[in-house]
Image 1 (cartoon, rainbow, N blue to C red):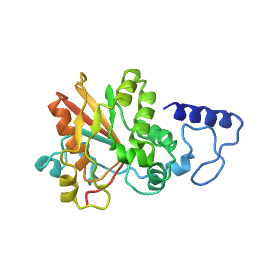
Image 2: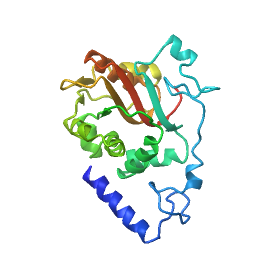
Image 3: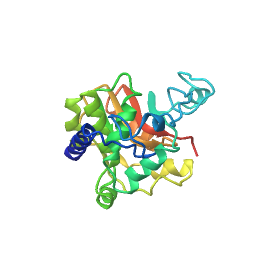
Image 4: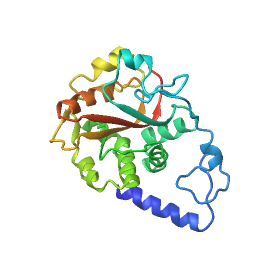
Length: 239
């Protein structure tokens, strides 16, 4: 987390010199909370969504027809937009190109879509083998940014102590069918310590089928959590 704070300080120092340029279009821009100019931020599509599952709907609704028949295990999903440009490029850089500092800018964008933050933020965990290979968990960095934006001093410790742990190495979810995603994750997670908060939020970079989040929610319900929100940069359709 200290690295993100340092990067934020460096950016603000550069902005004071009046030399800021948008990372996406390279045009000069005034000081900003993120690395993108307003014109590029306007490229991010805002569409009607079901407030429960987060999928696109014809009109914004609290609960869509699919959620009435097969509700997800969580209560509400907040996202910035779909998994499309320009967000897709930066998600891929964050996740696969070692550019963990992008979590700050993506997390700031996400924070603007969350009106009532949960008192406890829990990043979706990585198995230690994948963490060792990647050297960081992008969801941790997103969670730390959200904690700072929401002034949640008490939950920073929770992120570091890893309340949620991935105990089973599984195949990457990307590219798997919806049914295989669900069986792929069985027994993959456990809760390592008691949770006092009744309202928590799970944080991830992208939610597709929701299989990972659903299984984590099942474990959180067993631990006594009553309300579960999902904070994700991108929400894409089920495959």
